[in-house]
Length: 466
Image (tube, rainbow, N blue to C red):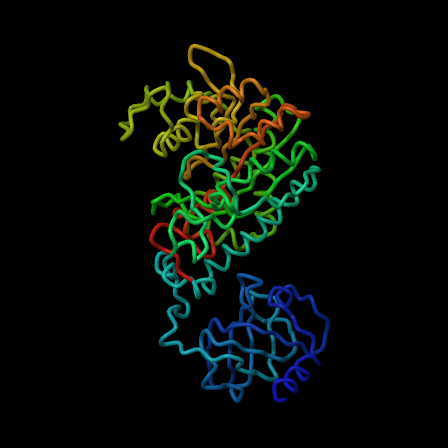
């Protein structure tokens, strides 16, 4: 009953988020603010608190009579403050909350709490505490930016007539053909003999891409997109790889040009970035001031200029003529490594670069044959960006039944992809699409070196905390 009475008492006053309070979005009269204490300073005649509820990088200053001080009122504690918003006499803030009551909702022992007051913790340090790191300024800003970027990407596609498709997480397909998949078993299947029947009657995996399912939907809706988790069982702990990450993927029917695909990628990239910069200026500034001071200028240049386009063959020639010594020797027919990608971006003036028309044998079966020679290529494109390397990958898809049948037969995949061949038999059209790694996108716009620091709960080889 005490809890019920407490809720009834709190409901009498309007609740204000810190962001709203800082903007002065409330008329005269008492309000209540709930959040966590970021700093406490007690003087003889006044008590100062900084309170934050995650809605803003900036804290709300609370001014109170020292008689309201409580021994549980410490850094990290959860509080509810009731009082009146007043104009602040300080130049750095417009509004402060003059407290009438302060209630500690949840105490916090500042000595054992891993985060310390007014200390800028390195990203490597807070990574140890996935259950607490969201309370740090850096991760708080990152997650607000991530939320706005997600909304901006959805808005871009919806504003341009795309239908959002929820592609499955469990699949029987290996879209990339790389074999780096997580296979799904029930707990009983894991204990029993491998000869037992599968739960789905066929081997099932966590998806590496929603592309093939999007191609199905593009045959009915013309323009479609998906935005969801994907999984790669790569035994890598590099700064660029995660076992679970988010992908933005789109498919466009009735397109016969890589230029169409590249234009959508560039428009999406610039629109989403402009939205984030306008809606999260203080959060973005934190990264550009303390994490990557040169990134702001890079982004401004990127937004002003068109992305460059070079062919794979041109890229290999640039690498061969480079004075830099590479760990992996650049040769036509070999995949571009991260060191190659970063050099190409630098060579092109530190702007995003599209690399098009890759060797036929390097790419998956679904990419469209360019029918060129003697250097046989497919209509594929990768977008390389400064500091990250490959960010997007896409292609025109092979819509010609005879070409696709021939390639699947050579790979021994005809039976597994009979449904994919059906798409070419029944109203096939020229089409193409792309996928963009969301975490790598955040790495680029914010200048974050390690991909593990741009996702709430990173999963990677030998690590699955929480």
